[in-house]
Length: 254
Image (cartoon, rainbow, N blue to C red; front, top):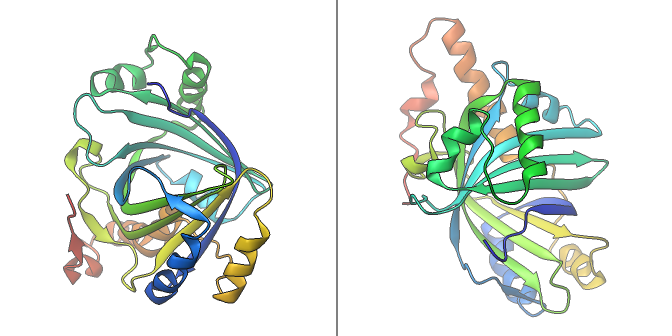
């Protein structure tokens, strides 16, 4: 597992771009940054929460401190591919992420309280504590296509672009593929700037030139507010399914 980062501490700023803004800004961005070796790739996530969705409901209220847990894979994983179990916390604008890498045969044992006998045992204990503290379970799949860039002179600076954000609440298994319904249907692209300290002046000038401004956005939070709350309301009312499920807006980019 050489080369894998297990801990992160950085600032993260999100922006919502139109397709036009993205296409116009990208050539200028490439003058200062270069795409990572993965190119355009798929990211798959399973977000965990309590029965009452306490973690995401707290996060939506924008407190000084918030945290969440997810499983992440890069594409639909095979039996020997890494699955990342991640605790992500945000305090006063700084994001802290701690994660471990698991294989398919290790996952069930780990989440039943077993210890995995490799590095990062402290992070494993933190994840076990998180599960005991919140009593969480899988709640929603969220996947998207991402292309990431790193600064040529400042590799700690990263910018990611995510599109085709999709979700489902069935088949909450990363091995079940990346199919899902679109979270946003207006071709918006989520840009995220990640930096350890201060962002460079050239980047601030570029954002100003293209009228790109910070936008508070959470993929899981948006999914919860737009769809999951509706699901809950329909279930409580005894309806079979919410009306948006008839829209046919389903994508499968496996």
